[in-house]
Image (cartoon, rainbow, N blue to C red):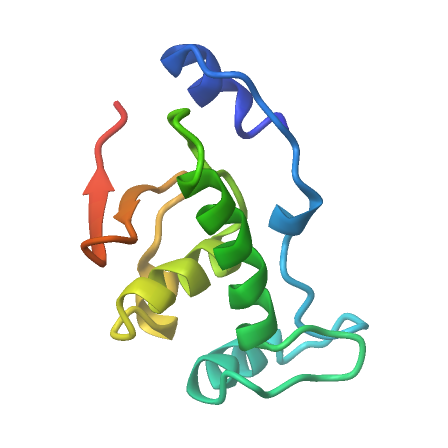
Length: 125
Protein backbone atom coordinates (compact mmCIF):
# COMPACT_ATOMS: atom_id res chain seq x y z
CA UNK A 1 0.00 0.00 0.00
CA UNK A 2 2.81 2.42 0.87
CA UNK A 3 4.42 1.71 -2.50
CA UNK A 4 1.29 2.69 -4.42
CA UNK A 5 0.36 5.77 -2.41
CA UNK A 6 2.76 8.35 -3.96
CA UNK A 7 1.80 7.35 -7.51
CA UNK A 8 -1.89 7.31 -6.67
CA UNK A 9 -1.65 10.78 -5.14
CA UNK A 10 0.30 12.11 -8.14
CA UNK A 11 -2.35 10.74 -10.53
CA UNK A 12 -5.32 11.49 -8.25
CA UNK A 13 -6.35 7.83 -8.11
CA UNK A 14 -7.77 5.88 -5.20
CA UNK A 15 -5.82 2.95 -3.80
CA UNK A 16 -7.51 -0.42 -3.63
CA UNK A 17 -5.53 -3.23 -2.06
CA UNK A 18 -5.84 -6.64 -3.71
CA UNK A 19 -4.27 -9.70 -2.09
CA UNK A 20 -3.81 -11.29 -5.50
CA UNK A 21 -0.99 -8.78 -6.09
CA UNK A 22 1.04 -10.01 -3.14
CA UNK A 23 4.61 -11.04 -3.78
CA UNK A 24 5.08 -14.45 -5.35
CA UNK A 25 6.28 -17.12 -2.93
CA UNK A 26 9.00 -19.06 -4.72
CA UNK A 27 9.29 -21.77 -2.07
CA UNK A 28 7.98 -22.31 1.43
CA UNK A 29 11.26 -21.72 3.26
CA UNK A 30 14.26 -19.42 2.83
CA UNK A 31 16.94 -20.91 0.59
CA UNK A 32 20.42 -19.70 -0.30
CA UNK A 33 20.04 -20.52 -3.99
CA UNK A 34 16.80 -18.56 -4.49
CA UNK A 35 18.25 -16.71 -7.48
CA UNK A 36 19.00 -20.00 -9.28
CA UNK A 37 15.49 -21.22 -8.47
CA UNK A 38 14.00 -18.01 -9.79
CA UNK A 39 15.99 -18.26 -13.01
CA UNK A 40 14.89 -21.86 -13.54
CA UNK A 41 11.28 -20.80 -12.93
CA UNK A 42 11.50 -18.66 -16.08
CA UNK A 43 12.72 -21.68 -18.04
CA UNK A 44 10.11 -24.11 -16.66
CA UNK A 45 7.02 -22.04 -15.93
CA UNK A 46 5.28 -25.01 -14.28
CA UNK A 47 8.13 -25.80 -11.87
CA UNK A 48 6.89 -25.52 -8.30
CA UNK A 49 8.87 -25.97 -5.12
CA UNK A 50 7.27 -27.14 -1.90
CA UNK A 51 5.26 -24.35 -0.31
CA UNK A 52 5.70 -22.13 -3.35
CA UNK A 53 3.89 -21.04 -6.45
CA UNK A 54 4.88 -21.83 -10.04
CA UNK A 55 5.45 -19.01 -12.52
CA UNK A 56 2.30 -20.02 -14.39
CA UNK A 57 0.22 -19.94 -11.21
CA UNK A 58 1.51 -16.48 -10.31
CA UNK A 59 1.07 -15.26 -13.89
CA UNK A 60 -2.53 -16.46 -13.91
CA UNK A 61 -3.12 -14.59 -10.64
CA UNK A 62 -1.89 -11.23 -11.93
CA UNK A 63 -3.55 -11.67 -15.34
CA UNK A 64 -6.89 -12.13 -13.57
CA UNK A 65 -6.41 -8.79 -11.80
CA UNK A 66 -5.35 -7.05 -15.02
CA UNK A 67 -8.25 -8.48 -17.01
CA UNK A 68 -10.73 -7.39 -14.32
CA UNK A 69 -9.22 -3.91 -14.29
CA UNK A 70 -9.48 -3.75 -18.09
CA UNK A 71 -13.25 -4.26 -17.81
CA UNK A 72 -13.67 -1.04 -15.85
CA UNK A 73 -13.72 2.46 -17.28
CA UNK A 74 -11.42 3.72 -14.53
CA UNK A 75 -7.75 4.43 -15.17
CA UNK A 76 -5.81 1.76 -13.30
CA UNK A 77 -2.28 1.53 -11.98
CA UNK A 78 -1.25 -1.91 -10.77
CA UNK A 79 1.54 -2.00 -8.21
CA UNK A 80 3.28 -5.19 -7.16
CA UNK A 81 6.68 -6.76 -6.70
CA UNK A 82 9.16 -7.21 -9.53
CA UNK A 83 8.78 -10.95 -10.03
CA UNK A 84 5.00 -10.80 -10.32
CA UNK A 85 5.18 -7.79 -12.65
CA UNK A 86 7.83 -9.55 -14.75
CA UNK A 87 5.47 -12.51 -15.16
CA UNK A 88 2.78 -10.15 -16.42
CA UNK A 89 5.27 -8.67 -18.88
CA UNK A 90 6.27 -12.21 -19.93
CA UNK A 91 2.60 -12.97 -20.65
CA UNK A 92 2.50 -10.01 -23.03
CA UNK A 93 5.98 -10.57 -24.46
CA UNK A 94 7.48 -14.05 -23.94
CA UNK A 95 10.93 -12.57 -24.62
CA UNK A 96 10.70 -10.83 -21.24
CA UNK A 97 12.51 -13.28 -18.98
CA UNK A 98 14.91 -13.68 -16.12
CA UNK A 99 17.56 -11.30 -17.47
CA UNK A 100 14.99 -8.56 -18.04
CA UNK A 101 13.72 -9.12 -14.47
CA UNK A 102 17.33 -8.76 -13.23
CA UNK A 103 17.71 -5.53 -15.19
CA UNK A 104 14.56 -3.96 -13.72
CA UNK A 105 15.02 -0.90 -11.53
CA UNK A 106 13.03 -0.10 -8.42
CA UNK A 107 10.58 1.44 -8.99
CA UNK A 108 9.89 0.54 -12.59
CA UNK A 109 6.74 1.66 -14.40
CA UNK A 110 5.32 0.07 -17.54
CA UNK A 111 2.28 0.79 -19.66
CA UNK A 112 0.86 -2.59 -20.69
CA UNK A 113 -1.77 -2.77 -23.39
CA UNK A 114 -3.34 -6.21 -23.52
CA UNK A 115 -5.25 -5.51 -26.74
CA UNK A 116 -2.18 -4.58 -28.76
CA UNK A 117 0.13 -6.82 -26.70
CA UNK A 118 2.56 -3.94 -26.15
CA UNK A 119 4.75 -2.90 -23.26
CA UNK A 120 6.11 0.62 -22.90
CA UNK A 121 8.55 1.61 -20.18
CA UNK A 122 7.36 4.87 -18.62
CA UNK A 123 9.36 7.76 -17.19
CA UNK A 124 7.66 8.98 -14.01
CA UNK A 125 10.25 11.51 -12.91
